[in-house]
Every structure is written in structure tokens, then in C-alpha cells.
Image 1 (cartoon, rainbow, N blue to C red):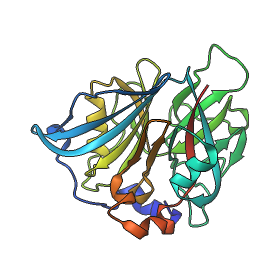
Image 2 (cartoon, rainbow, N blue to C red):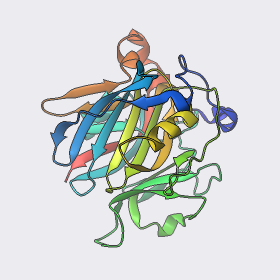
Image 3 (cartoon, helix red, strand yellow):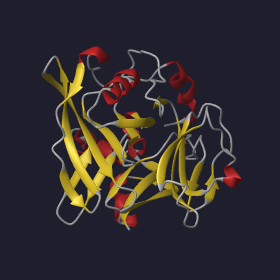
Image 4 (tube, helix red, strand yellow):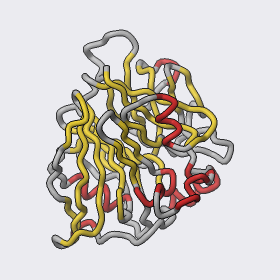
Length: 275
């Protein structure tokens, strides 16, 4: 998302579509997991308001012990082009970027630092693939930058993306305020078992507070959750030998030729690969 929007984001989010109900009314249907590979599964859950379907939330559950994460950054292109280039089973958007395509928070790609070394607006960081073999470091996790600021050049992981806000911290506390600004979202989270969960609003739109409440009360046992970019940039693409899925579908179908516009192109993505 362009840097000039960043000041607006600090106050609230631009609305893309009709907001869902207040958080107290929200729940989701039980996930019906579809196996995509070793340690990799997918579900499309209904978002419910008073037991009525009000939208849908796509979720990918990833076991970092069986799957590796890599961050990619170069000239913006469509997410389908990214997948074709990197051949990842799962591809999703990373964090915010400026009009020049450069990230506004730190990105670590194969150990290379890209973007600003420090941006106080960034509240969390997804990190993966520790250097060497260390039993003390998780293969993928979310860091709370408010509680534990990092030293970029001493970061022990080779992949990373900073973003904001942190929706839930590791103690289950909601870290965003109520708002009426709704949008399509991509969120990355950890669960109590150490899995990584990637959420994308398949239909409908959510405020950040609603989404935080939904995840906090979910049966998915979400631990920490970090918001990534939203709006047109919020995209998830899955492609395996037997399965293909694009979310949200409106970006691919209802908008037709608009998919070729630069608003839908991504300069930074996260790819998931079998180990």
C-alpha cells in the first residue's frame, strides 16, 4: 500500500466494501480442513453474524517443520506471476510499501535487509528460517516489536517482514482499538502448537478490531496475530498439483481487466515451500 496512505492508516483504514457486524456478533463456522501436502492444509470458513452468513475467511495452516518460508522482493507484479516465478505452493502479500515499491518496514529476504532498519510505526515482525540449526529458535514465529525491539544486523532469522498493527499479542491481548473502517485483510498468526496461520478475507470486509476479536475467540487457538497489507493488496494464491485457489475472488473475476492495474501488483510476497 502506498506510503502516502500510511498517515491515514494510523487513524483508520480505507473502506473497501461493506463492513461486517460488530465483533460481539461475529463467529465462524468450524474449519473443514483440506490437506494440500505434508503439514499444509486449507479451509474456507463462513463468517457468521447471529448465525447468518456475512462473509468468508480463507485460512492456510502451515507446519514450519514441514514447510519453509521465503520472502521475495523486486519489481511489482501480479501474485499469479509471482507464483509462476517462484513455484511456491502458497503465495500471499507481505507488508506496506511506498509508491516506488520499496517497503516502509524492514524486509529480510534470504538474509538481505531491504527497506528502513527502523520504523516506529511497525508493531510486529514475522520471521522464519533461523540461521544454522538452533533448537532454541522457532523456524517461524511473530515478534512483538514493542516488547522486544530487534537489532536488524543481529537478527538470527534469514526471512522477515515487519508490519502493523499487531492484532493479538502472545498473551491474547487485543492491540487495536475499535473502528468503523473495514477492508479486505491478510493476517499472519501463530497458534498454540507452533503452526503458522495465514488468513485472507475471501468475501465481506472486516475492521481490524473485529478481526482481532474473531481470532481471539476462534477455536483455532490463535496465539499472536499480525496484520499485513489490506485493500487491493490483500491477496492469497494457492497452487498445487491438484488444487488452485485465489482470494478474494473479486480481484480475479468481478474486476475483470482491472486485475492488470498496478494497484493489484505486489512488490513483496511470502512464499511457502515443502522442505
